[in-house]
Image (tube, rainbow, N blue to C red; front, top):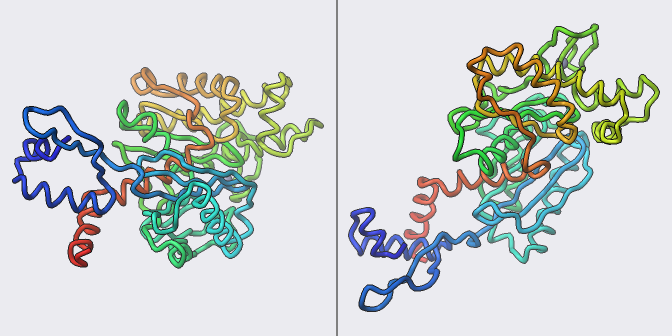
Length: 375
Ligand SMILES: [Zn+2]
């Protein structure tokens, strides 16, 4: 749009539009993108959102591996890196490591610290969202009560968003693929553990204490007293997660240390692996049938390592979901594998940060600062 188009569309005075546009250009959020068609006199200058007017840092910290990225203001990845990193090494080791990788990635993308507008971090445990504080995370020893933004601010004094990794994966998948089509979606991560991110009416639903979607510890009926690390028996995570399946295969004498080994065996056609993944799908299906009856999602997206064996996993899930869910809730339900795969988390980090730093109130606040300082 040109300045004249904006004045027509908003009904604001040309002078008001000009003043605002100059501030946004100075703030690198708008750019003049060339001349539009002339209607007689001098052709009007077109304005466009300046996606390269800053960058976002994203870190998806999983239990055993992580992915980090620098994105532009449209969420496009400019540089990224995956690495093996155990979250259990604790915040004093993990967070400085992460900040150093951010600096390397910035350098690789040809950017400076001053261009960073926000940081998004996903962690594999419950988070008190407003404070970015990890709360009694079972697989993150040493992180309880740590306010993560405080550790990031000395190097990057910008808004820092911290959330549970599965919530961010749900947000990433929703924002990149589904936002224009549906409002209610479940993202189920089946990897070392089992967790679920809930998008309700287009927004992440975190619940009263931030633990909504913690489906891994729902009990399934088809169990033989297997003890979960949470202390209960028969949790779906203790029976149908990648690490549970690896254990079941080891008990049969096969070599499987992690979920990825399970997937490889199934892909190679190993019959026990295929059989056990289908059984895991049915157990997961029992939990999801309950979720479907409770929440009536339009789409269930399955992510995490086990999604790579989705043809076997989904067969079991669908069998039970269709038998156990109410017909109306299941009729148009779609079950799909994550299309962003191991990028869902960093995409969610970036989109979550961008929703915050590009919100009208945030832009107003930063422009007010700009005007006051007279720069
Ligand atoms: Zn449990």
